[in-house]
Length: 151
Ligand code: DQA
Image (cartoon, rainbow, N blue to C red):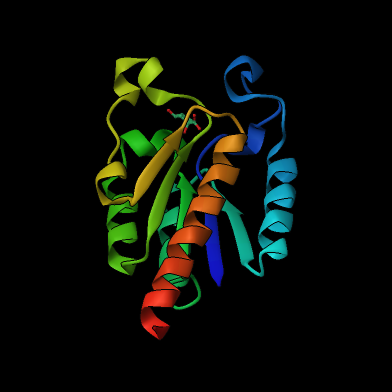
């Protein structure tokens, strides 16, 4: 079981960036922890971060044959990017959208997501724990799909 985790712009600054909103954990901490959680369940987790929309689009497309599911925190591109949404639609894999903060508690422009309508679900507002919740949810979904395909 292979899962791709994509982090959007400015998430490379986690730990230093507005810790009152995004917490004190660095992206490396989060990624390493999640890779271990995945490994314990026999899942391979590949992580990717970029500040560039096109690089994110390419990473999604490049993993069409590798990934069984995609976890994505599109960060600011959540609210602007048709291209990332189209890339996610194109690969036809289950997608879970993740946010550290509760985007509905924040400015109005964060309330709209281009990704949510094509995601299985959204996890928003639990700080770095949002990622672990999403990982476990994705593993569950993929196990379900595996069961349906074998049974
Ligand atoms: C974010 C929320 C977005 O609105 C914001 O642009 C981010 C991070 C979150 O994880 O809470 O960069 O996706």
